[in-house]
Image (cartoon, rainbow, N blue to C red; front, side, top):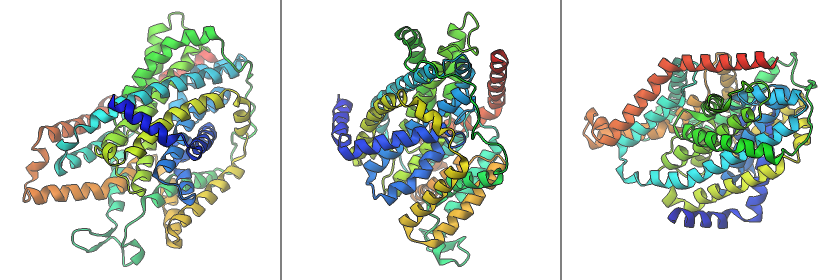
Length: 513
């Protein structure tokens, strides 16, 4: 009942004209960015962080805008998947298996509307899970000391690669690179400059917002410049019919059990640090195929094959907010970017967030409910508009992304040096993408490096240099165990899982052809 009372207070915060407008704008922009192949939720949120600061938004308003973009991008990823057979992001990959065949059959509008309903169900149920589960995790706050917090940060790094990670060694390298960047600046304990190379602008360290916008947004611009002469999605003929926009009641009733089952599975996958929406989408589709595909219709345009991954990946997106808000451990790449935004607003996510900043967290959760309703109401009648958005030429889109990045970062700091640093991180992000090195561990290292170092030093000071204090409590032992298992499991099973995901995609693609 306490959770429901707090949620009512959250609605009092969220139900203002300004917050409703920000939620509406965030949902629209997120859907557009999710629909454009290659951008996805992480890039969408990172691109709009400077805009939030430029507008002078407070913590609650900024988080409402960015989480609306997050949920909107999860919705929007399905548009190009269904109509063009091009996933807007990784979680939307499984939606192409039945969504594109439905579009080829002239049922593209029905597939889009059904995916919108399934996304709503998954996100709605996941938000209720956030309401009841996150406050329970807060109750363990008093058990955390410096050693436990250090183990928690290790857990974040060990599991962020996820079970579907292509290369754990590259993920570990990226995390080490992020930690190295976090060490730039004056040592808080000794007052000695580290890795500043005599540049006074680096004495305060590197602003993680500058790093995030450079790594995600500017690197996208550089990739476009690299491939500017190649064919793009622009002008591509979908070869697909939109057909009816509103799915029939019989179709919704047929898919309802699928949406409920896969929402639960997706939420569990999202709560587990490092699993994320990609795994939630794959598990949801695979489980549903085994349960209900007795006639072999999955992969040929079965509506349940659209509903399952859409409910699963949106539930996972909501579930990823649970460890981010309650423990300060991002459950996905996008929540790592949201974590950076909270830290930039001087709000520390973790066990004490619900007591120290209840207006922010409960206003945010209430805004998620409102945003879901907005997305459901917006996406079905605006299918035709979002289809046309896919035809926006990258030569128009990418200069806008670059402009927003430069104006936003300069508006935050007023320093041209930060703009140069952002360009350096843009080049770094471009190189890392070329080498297939994940960007999210780099960001996590920049975000958590100083906190991790501070808690390690604090634990060593309290124990008078005894390293065994890091493993002294049952909670820290449990966290270290989960960290080791979370890092080793992808090495053992990740290759098998990725092979199955690729094989399933190839098999279903062959059937649809």
